[in-house]
Structures are given as C-alpha cells and as structure tokens.
Length: 119
Image 1 (cartoon, rainbow, N blue to C red):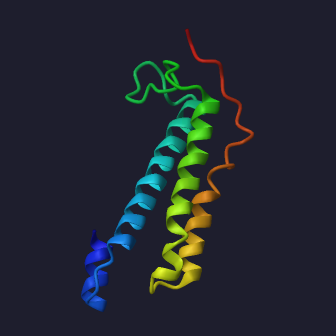
Image 2 (image 1 turned 90 degrees about the vertical axis):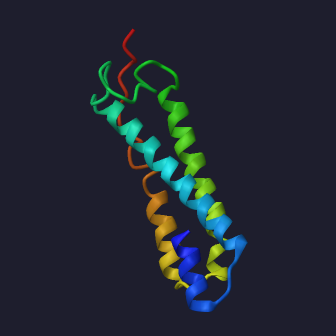
C-alpha cells in the first residue's frame, strides 16, 4: 500500500494491477521466508515440544513437503513479480536482483540432514 501511495504521489496515477501484483508477490515471498525459518529451525533442532511452531515437530507437514512449499511460494512470488519489471519505474536490475536474492534461499539448505520426527 505504501508503494501504491508513493507511486500515486509521484505520477498521479494509481495502478490496481501493480498493486495486486506487488501485494501478491510480497505475501508469497513472506510466506516462503516463514517456511524457510520453520524448516531451518527444525533442521537445527531449535524447534521442539515447547516451541510455538510445531508444524514439523508434530508431523503436520514433512520436511520434503515444507521444501516443496518453499519452492512453490518463491516461484509464485517470482511469477507475480516479473510482470512488475516493465510496469514499474524502478530500475529493472534492482527488481531482478531482489527476485534472485529470494530465490537463492530455496536451495541453501539442500544438504541439511533432517532428523526423524520424535514420536
């Protein structure tokens, strides 16, 4: 919303399409970040029975399912963010860099060994 307000202030134009794409992209990338945190905390043994996030601890989702959701969320963010490049006045290099920086987290923990969930 702040970006849409600033764009309106600068250009005196409101773009519902850009607002929807940017909001969807932000929500998807934020969700991916939360999932990365859940996955990494579990992999490092930080999450346990006393943790507030028990998604993996209680087996609501398996580690491969969480990795698939991370990939899907980042892909969704990229798909929603890419159309903003030609629609935005922001430098394309900055927008592409932000998308690639987020995508780099998808495979950053690929070699982490996940312990079996406690029963």
